[in-house]
Length: 104
Image 1 (tube, helix red, strand yellow):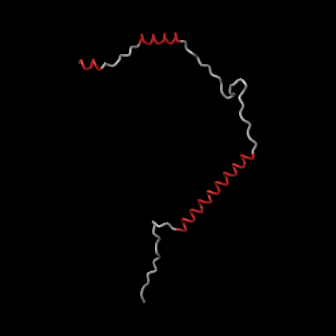
Image 2: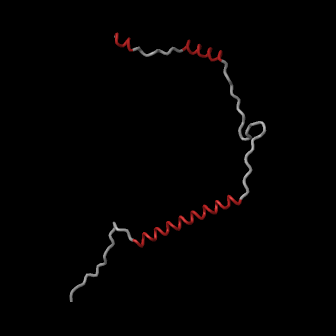
Image 3: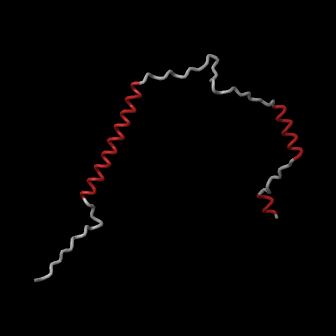
């Protein structure tokens, strides 16, 4: 009487189990079908609803949820005065020119 080896063969971890793969694929297919059905239901309800009236503008050309703003325009003389005032108070020195650097 010899001893017999009753070891079960273990599945190779690199080789996918076909039964498991079929289950996963069927679950994915079911989820896709449910998503498509819900999208089609939403689409059908949108088609069955009466269309919403478009937003109309008031006759004066303004939109009701926007408040008009006032833009202040400065005259050119005022800008010239401000530039002269800044120029008298501040002086920007220009960087040395390349000729002056070579002479040094």
